[in-house]
Image 1 (cartoon, one colour):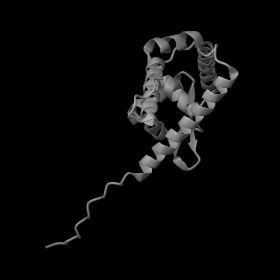
Image 2: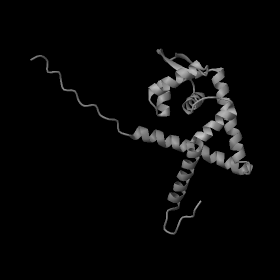
Image 3: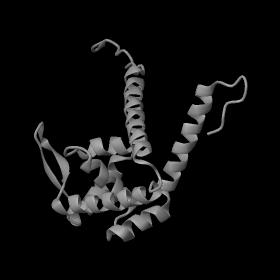
Image 4: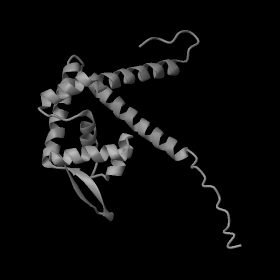
Amino acid sequence: MPTPRPGEDPVLTATAEIERALNRITHLAGRPRQHERLMAESGLSLDRAAVAILRHIAESEPLRPGVLAVRLSVEASHVTRQLRQLEQAGHVVRVPDPDDRRAQRVRLTETGLNAVERMREVRRRGMEAALADWSPADLGRLAGLFHRLVDDFVRHTETEIDARPRPRRPARAPDAGPG
């Protein structure tokens, strides 16, 4: 990491470097070649959108499709189409929503859980290979700092959303009645 020049704020310099590193990791992890390797090594044949959906469902309790769309920042119709394909392939199943009998949630089947576990194993092996030369102490520090980073991002994001002013609805004109 570069040292701040005289007069530069060390916090701003470090923050910029962290942001660059996170962008690089995101870029590397999201490359199509990386997805192809993940699919080849896990023995699966899923597109990137399906993988994202399976991972989100695996990391939570059964979700309504609309909630899943919001979490993925995509249109509900996109999620519905992907869920239909995942359901046909036996990866997910729709279950009644305990809070609303008219609604459904989506959960992983054993096949879906197995697929997620295979992908996690491939990613874990890749991570182990990339960090093979790191000491256990460095790995422990990195893990702790990453968890702290994620927790702070989540807290900041939730605060930012809660602090945003809600749009006001225009006042309705009183009903003038006939006349």
